Image 1 (cartoon, rainbow, N blue to C red):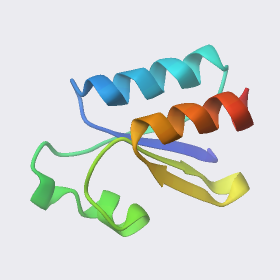
Image 2 (image 1 turned 90 degrees about the vertical axis):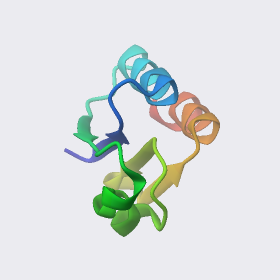
Image 3 (image 1 turned 90 degrees about the horizontal axis):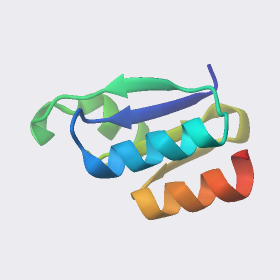
Image 4 (image 1 turned 180 degrees about the vertical axis):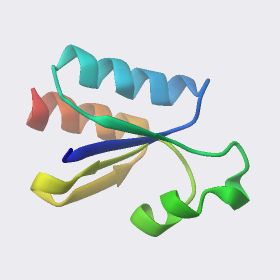
Length: 79
């Protein structure tokens, strides 16, 4: 799996990114993270911060956060 989405259950921004990936037909794996920021060590390890959503596209060497940036990336690069 080359695309991973770090997401929090119930996060509306994470759902928007997930919906965009689904609409674009992108195969991806969701990594569900803990609700407590202090317990999001996996997110910090890959992105340098603990906020979600975070998209990791290994094939293109891209790691990004901020849902607006991710949505633009999906539309521009993954459709």
